[in-house]
Length: 402
Image (tube, rainbow, N blue to C red; front, side, top):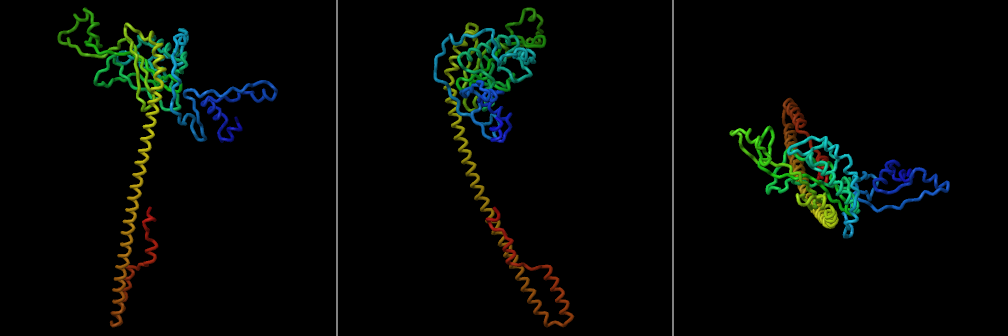
């Protein structure tokens, strides 16, 4: 490790982190001593790259900065029910400890929980539904793992985005902006089917009901007791429509890849709870992986086309700017040259004037001639002389200005 690290001019600890990030096995402590003493220390084979594993590292790259290949789905297969048998007592690592953090979160509009921590499983529910929602998420994750699909928080090998959703059981035709906003995690919860990531969100749905304002809160009209009705003032006996949590859950799968728009939802109804649909959901997620992979490939191809178009636009813009700079330099150089020539021409005419004056002073008396020569000296100092060759050498041509 130290020799290879020295070759790449990085520290051995950094190289160890790179191997861990790339899931590359490295010799454990004491490996070389065992070999020297004839003791076995088997070398593990290089495993297949898993979801989120870095596959390329070059000197100067930050760990996780290398680009990843297009995700690929495994070969289509039918999942047998016996494969998805799970232990009800086991907890998936993504769900472990989530209940306590959610339960301590603050309660916002409609009773939804908003925990202070953001690196949590993607569950958006009210407190009465928290326990059942986490149990449902745990069962789904374990069944996905039993089917050979890895569930985890989105890794940092590429950009994974959580798709927004509408918590309404029957979303309105015109989307409404919700305030306060529901809780959202810092990293989406994803399942990898092969190397294809599919985002998962479990949330409690809401419905719009007629309600009245009683004792500081809105109460659905259907749940107002007769005693509360008698207490209502005739002047304040008015109703409005409000959203209320239904207690029914929805599992939403989505594409976390930018530009690849895909989603599918499974809603809970009284006659068909989601717990009994988990096997079908696992199969449908498995079948959806090729669709998501194709959308990602198309999105990346469109991104490459847009990138080339943008680069071509930049190249054309730079060419136009270069031509404009050349034209401006040419015009400025010409203007400066004409200015120098005009200045030289003016000084030559003035010098001809001075010579004519000097020749004319020869006919003057001595006193007048002295006065004229003194004035002539002052005039020459005031105007100065122009060296044509020096002025040309100091002049900047069009190429000198670029």
